[in-house]
Image (cartoon, rainbow, N blue to C red; front, side):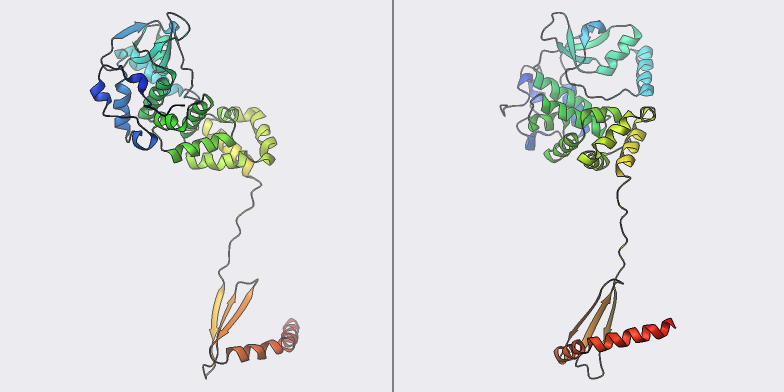
Length: 323
């Protein structure tokens, strides 16, 4: 894929001077640094454009899904807000590439769904754009809202890679650096999209716990365990966060507990003439003796030559104590 301006499809935007404030010339220089900047970037897709009313039935979903499920309470709050004061912000759509008179959502899926539920038209900006510009706009608007969970972002990134987009486009769309995108991809390589969808968005679970689960789920020895958990009817009755916990616990139950390490006891010895200095270490399973100073070598040989006798003496005294 050509490594040109990632937003070449936006070259015809009315406000070119404003768009130039956000050059997209490479992953290292083009990543947008804050949610506020991302929100402004997303808004530029709508600036200077006529807002039209569309029948929701002529608008299709994006060709790449970004949400695993809808939060019922949040969605109902949105429906009631639109019912009370109307739709404040238009959605962005593009003409359908194959069917005249139909459109495809770039961003604003929930507002479209709310309009459909209310039985009213949806306010929209129609802009012609290519697929690459579409996914960048969709990803940046989602990142600006900051309400997609880690695994939803990872699933979105994985889907973009499947569609042939390179890491530079994915980084720009998600406003994420190369390391973050790599971690998302590593999770999606170990956990299949089917397992992710079975768990759901898991809003209370962050990146590191998903990484930990992916390491467990990626083991060939755990394949049967994953299938067994997902086939349990009770699993699907749980909230998304609990489904994550249930699978994690099932895969991690055979993990060995971490053994506590006992700190080694240390002691030193030195005779009156200070011609030998000894250091002893004992952790219960191992004992070490080291010596230095003028007589260390000779005294060490003296001890070594008498180890048999010393050990016999040790056993004898241990036996007396046992009596």
